Length: 535
Image 1 (spheres, rainbow, N blue to C red):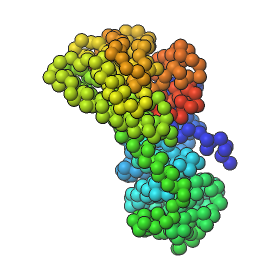
Image 2: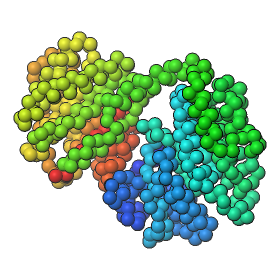
Image 3: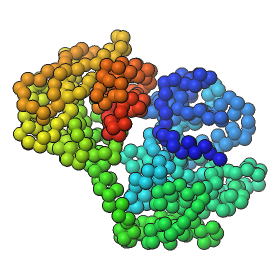
Image 4: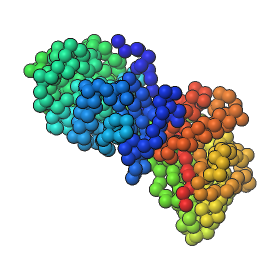
């Protein structure tokens, strides 16, 4: 039986610059540069690599040296690669390549940063409609697999990942099989192939005699768990399911294959019909309305943060973010000026609440209006201090009593300098290309909206090719250890991750920093932006 602690693990891949003491990290696997070790099991290793052309992070799976001595494991590995190559679909993990390298075989796949469906089941955070929308995406993935003659055989919440943008990804084809494969093979004879809680009766009886309907049964168990908000462990109580949806789930979970859905197309049709009919609105629980309001708030907060960094040839930018169920205003914006300079804004309210989220949206509008009315469009230098002073005046005129931790960063490649204006408990980390020793840039300004003032302080520093900057929402006052010690810990943490590619550095640093915060600040939304000058 699986250790119960397994189910409490963070399902995001761990990005660690330090490998297991017994595992050396290769520089390359096939054509792919390797950054770090993501995961190690008894039979395989999963590495974080880079796509040679796109420079995007990818996951590379290889067999351990010991596994390379077992023909059955090699056959499984080759079959997994073959099956993923057939399954080119937005809701299925993508294959980039496969082949041999000096230590054996490898599979290069899409690197997915997401949370497993198991976490959503445990947290009970999804509405009825959102739950069924996720199931529909998983069903479309199954439809694609079944159309290509592939049976997954191990569909379970851990193998369904939800990305931050809501996209669903089905993963793990280690025991998948082709429908027309000969069943005379003794593979799996006398042992379980799959996960018992999600296996259909016929799969439990004979793992080799599975069909498309077996996958549909597994999806039905997942649907049940998502709707009731708890793991079933084989105990199904259909009376807990909304009345209007119950007949669909009953057919999905029919013990007899003859009474069950034979084709996932029919299941998709019935779920879609249920949602379109409006029947789901009658089935909504009283808690669903609250969940929908929270979803609307989260959606509104997403608008204030770009989904991808800008494509500036002069600067390599990556950022990572963590959302939160606690409403809190947070916005990030990027501007490119005609005089070959760049302007980045990061702001957050000093208080939680829906009001702060609304005020942050208004602040974003003020910033854009001030920049549009400035003379920078005529090629004149941008005055950061004047901008911040005018913005502070506008906030005070609104008389909203809302205050903001605010950071403006002007990068001038012609003058090779940066101008940083922090308001409130904010710092900018600067790592020079010469020594890579992180330094913290600060200036003593109050939060915006706190008091009327005509003079703000700025910090000016060199900005040379290869320099790395890190803008973040981790104030010294959010640390459990205090300001100076936090800076030292944070600086050392950043140094430890400088060997990673820019595309994954921000995510790795963010993940390692969160445990340093107090529980209150850890539960807030956060964003971390890395910028490295290229030319």
